Length: 178
Image (tube, rainbow, N blue to C red; front, top):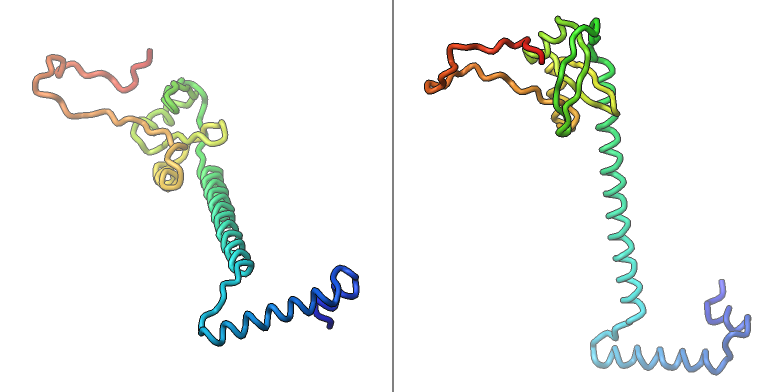
């Protein structure tokens, strides 16, 4: 295989004088390096190495972003599968159950039995892709570990009575609907 200089000569891009001058400059440079014991800095090589390092760093960043996106997609797929496998029937649509999600009051219609389960905390509402599903609390905890924004937190009614409360004797029923 011919050297690059030979290929340039054959193509007519350089002449024999330039080839000889380049060889002479290279041998002078090598002689100076041997005499002084120092190596000359090849700026082109350093620039190429720097460019290669930057390109590798950019490739690592892009790979990290791709990996993060793939992990996020896998988590969403896991959540969707858990919801699909464990969703409960909403019942006879007899009672409107109000809840808050994303600072908005929303409503689903459930049966009396499902309403009791929601109030007791055994069932939890999950909002996924614009739909609301009812799932058991255990599964909701697993989903909340992956993405807490999907699980609707039902506030627990406090059973503790303040000693200074003048209305402590008057209990508010859980099933009070307005």
